[in-house]
Image (cartoon, rainbow, N blue to C red; front, side):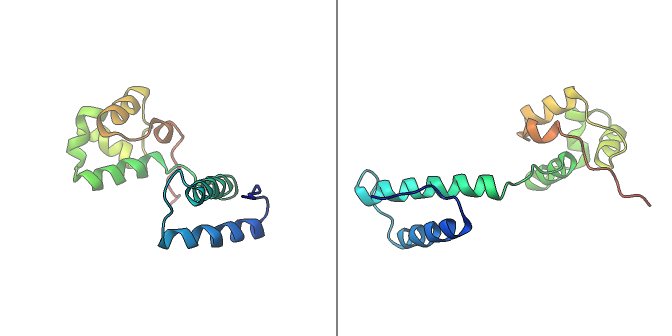
Length: 126
């Protein structure tokens, strides 16, 4: 079983070709082909993570996405953010999230704290 690190785009494409053959007939875990498949997937994921990192979403967009997922309205955010006018200020980027808001949104709505603590993108100038 010769497996090498993925260092170049050519190595990456070759690993993807090899892994894709396993998707149609996934090998049994713990067997030689299963172990090869698992190691190759680990290498592919590591290469993709390093080469093609995915940025965290904007905090306000993450809140809006969670609202959409759960069918929430701005009024539903009052327990986490404060009065309704404060909710609209947050959603319209007129006011930043506080640590307390971040904690509540993370704990109660499951929005990543790492996402929420980053600075939001500024509104576009009119």
